[in-house]
Image 1 (cartoon, rainbow, N blue to C red):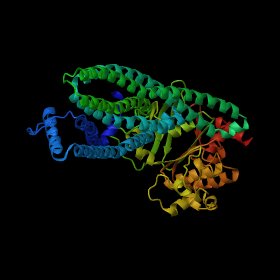
Image 2 (image 1 turned 45 degrees about the vertical axis):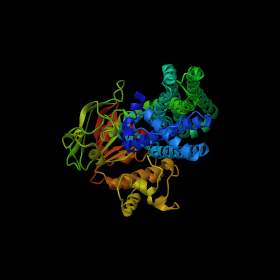
Image 3 (image 1 turned 45 degrees about the horizontal axis):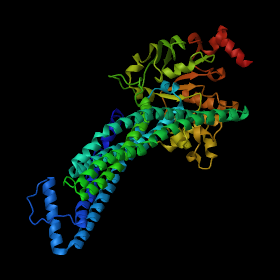
Image 4 (image 1 turned 30 degrees about the vertical axis):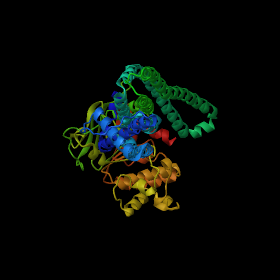
Length: 606
């Protein structure tokens, strides 16, 4: 039951449709059993066992009253038109009831479709929204392919197995309950024998369902592993080709693929047990009932007539189909529950970087950004920044230099609160950035990352990313400042040309200039350049550097650079070593000091 409860918040949004499905299923089940109920007077006429009734009784919703009045109507028809005409009337009645049953079954499916398709849509939307809310460090600890598997294969499994099975959970118990009520009215003694064997069926079904959930959980994890491996293969295709790793990669893929194949076989085989197992147990119960009911008919003591016995058997066969469907739905829910558990790993993940309860808005800053005694580590094993202090005054440019792993990029990641500081605080105009609204804080910033991050979209939409109703003239101006306009116009559709996945149709320098154009378009108050020119050739670097220098005039800039030639004009240069500030000053001052900066400078000259 707890597996079903997981879906209730999503299903509750479609309560109107579920109510209509419930009503249609009730009427569908009633008319379905009605086709069997009419068989009794049909057989009584055929066998000549019906007793003529000439007076009706007052209508009551009881078996005796309904049976007496039905026999009265049949007697009237037989008396006036004969038995042959009466059979024709009964056949027409059966056709009418069957038509009504089919209409209500169609309406049930019709109203059920928005539920079956809507719940996965809502889970997709909620999961994707949650991904956008999660902090950057969450994705550092998770595999991208596994997240994609949960967003695709697991949600599809929820739709195909769990949601469809839940609606079957509504329909089939209704049909079973109405059929049981009907056969109980026909012969309560035979029905009690059948009901006595139901706990055995339920126990066996439950055991198989639990094992199915375990196996399905393993299978879904393996499918995620396969998607992770495919993602890594596509990303590293050049290395695989050059180092002749095709056989090795194929062997690893086949291992994962074979394990997935074996687990899916176990899962599907256990699920395939539902129909034959339910049918077998049902007919075992029916065999006991037939033996008992047959003796009643053969005894001739009036407890059970032949036509009622035949109608009972026909009615019981109607239970078999919904009983099998109910067992299949039970197994489907168990199978889908494994996927729901994997999806909830994302939905239940803590969005630890959020607004404070009384967060302040901020649209600009007036004085400075201060890093006060910052200590930070990605894990408890190694400290990346150790008692780091820095003042970034408004309108000034500060460059961070140092060897790889010295903590430069970490400083750039702490200001937008991609990560939270371990100790210390970052202040803007004397107020902690944790006290500002997160969206407003990031609204002040523009970032050009070391690795070009672009989207499979047009040049125009990449440059104007995040801006509503962008001005085409400003987009073009930003592209010109980043020296991207010329190569954009060389494409077939200009600014509307698609750049491919991650800008795959562009060179490395073109991708980086497009990222710079995006930052220029935003016109941020604080500009973060993380190795912004590292992917450029010498000619493009000079062009982009000129554009960046114009962009950084009177703008607060935090620059991270390996190429010292790109930050000579910075107002202040801070040299980091193992997370500590070892030197700071202007380019001229640091060269004259003949320290760590001078050594880096000389190495690059060589």
